[in-house]
Amino acid sequence: MKSDDARLETIDPPGWSAPRGYSNGVLAPAGAQILFVAGQIGWDGEQRLVSDDLVAQFEQALRNVLAVVSAADGWPDQITRMTIYVDDRQAYLDATREIGAVYRQLMGTHYPAMSLVEVSALLESGARVEIEATAAIF
Image (tube, rainbow, N blue to C red; front, side, top):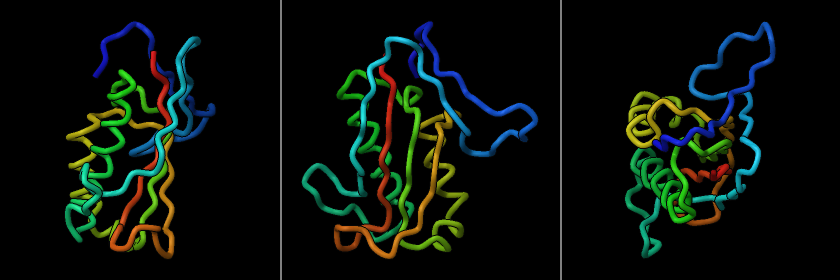
């Protein structure tokens, strides 16, 4: 994680319970550059899916997001927003423990503003998860 003095600020309305596994809002510091990361799926640099397994695809998709952030000289803790699209909500819920472990391995305890959306299908045949993100690079 980046050890810069500039920090993202978590925003929660007064009186709300603390969210678990995400932030309600994230405020970027003045002067940050905003990076928009296109939806990343669980494929490698040669555009081959790494597995049929949801957890393996989640891990690779998140690694791909982090590779784009890194290419912009950013860090995982500079991701402000993340949207996760899955083709099977129940399969995601069933794998929550394993997905959480992968998430913490790659992102630590940084939780951006996040949404999870179930879709009927993703564009690439065989893709089970797609992750898009926004980062504030400072």
